Image 1 (spheres, one colour):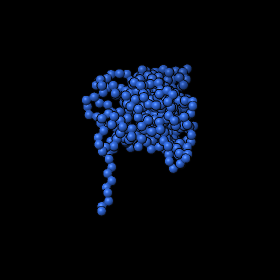
Image 2: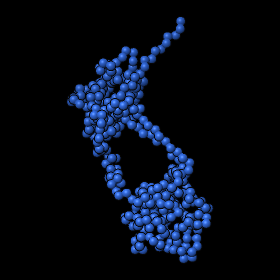
Image 3: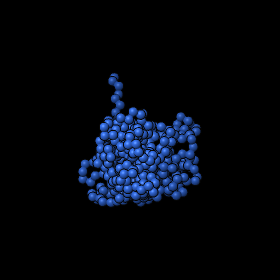
Image 4: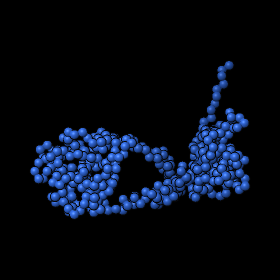
Amino acid sequence: MPPKKTVTNPVTTIRGPAYSDGDAGHRPSKANYTRADEEVFMQKVAGRWMEQTGRAQEGRTYSLNKLPAGYELWERPRPSDPRHFDKWLYGHPNHKTFDSPYRFYPHFEFLMRGGHGTCTCDMCKKGKPSPRSSVSVPALPRGRPPLHKGPVDEEGTPDVFQSLFTLLKSERTLTRKIEERASMDWRAEKPLVDSIANSARPPSFVPRHGEIVLYLSPLTQGHELRQDNVSHEFKIFDTRTSRYTGAPRWLAGIVTERPSRTPHIKDLEPKGKNSSTTKNQSVNITGFRIEPLPAPGSKDKNISKQHTYTSLDLIRPFTFWKTCLHGIPEPLLPSLSSTVRSSRGIGHMRRYTPEASSSAPKATGSATWSVSYHNLPGPTPHHQNPQQ
């Protein structure tokens, strides 16, 4: 007699609620708890949801793509029988636990409605806590109560992008300023972003804030950076003896501060010729503040603390490193050699786009792009000629 074949019902994944009131700070306080497998829990919740909405099909199993944000399933061995594990769902804003998917389901329906109306689950009713919650949940609540009704991310911050995509589906067209006022990251970064966006665009020959450049420390009086017309190498020129004295010691760094006054095109020429900088103006006022770059992966970050104020005529775009280092026999300094190596390629970048479409086909949800190169590009139009 042939063995019986095991038939496995196909599992259909459905999307959980976009809104969640889950509190990520509500978690077990004892060390004998561990994260539990959530698949069976999600299948029972999803199956009941499909039955209640009249969309369930015979012979098909349903599961959620994930639990609502802020909720997690935890388990611990039963004291009377350590081979058996009791499971609780944590994350309710009242810091009460659900001991089964069926007890959680009324609250799940409430979340699927976007938090509108009154939740009928036992945990939201006053004076009716779960029998098990009194054992595992501390008496004093932890974490902040939810202040926002609507979609939230995994950290409990209102997800304005999901809200706007949901609004876009209903209105088809949408023009609205994106603001994340409940996000501490957005509030901390907004002043810097606004200052960059609203600041006057500097001349094309001026290094930008945050740009990686090649630079020299300020030279002693009577010395200039020039390019030898014969060898086409950059060298230090002594104006008093009219002779080249050696090769420059290039460094790689990032521009962290620009001069208080707008640089002039004549600042590209060596000091003492036609520079607009007078002797009464110090380099920390008319120069750029540059921090050298440490070696990637190195724990020694002391080199990044050795910032320098240097003038515009001693700065070159980093893309010209081959031209600037041509003919220099000395070994590269750490900040320069590590930057050259790390800048020789660009890896992959991924960006996730939430599903949102009014009339177009449903988006796949992700887009990937990449670029790589072995030799750094040539001159770009936003900088000066390296031979100046």
